[in-house]
Image (cartoon, rainbow, N blue to C red; front, side, top):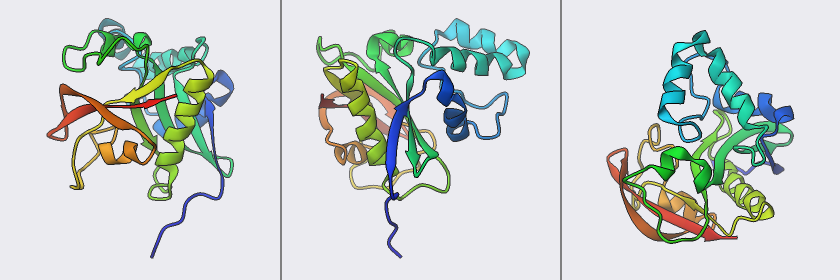
Length: 201
């Protein structure tokens, strides 16, 4: 049976009033040790410190604080008012892990925004959410003055792969949202090389 896309999809930045919607997607059970999508936003010593304190409460607090920045850490997608997807993006310069990376180097001097994580909530996959989520993320970045948006997906060709660890998806996934390959990296995901894809705003 062919799946159908959501009736209506909207994306909104994760401002403080939308934090619970973000959490419903990335950490629905509010588990202390579960991901709060912090690894690219904070430096390694900060992440380690959060893991030692408050049984994970400080991780949630840190995630909430990101939503109060000038540029919130990404967008949440809503299907008919229900939060169904999350896309972490922001200026590459605001992602310490990318800035210090020795395997994902800048392609050029363009002040790109970077997508570092895409999540679609269980029960809402294979319905067109991913493409709409990425397109909404690009539109929001453009509204904030981004000249282009990059991502670092797995180059899997026509093969299907387990995306459990390849959390930024595949080249084909981004191609559906208008991205093109502009560079290579020394990074891998699910045993496959990651490349740089970009869409101009």
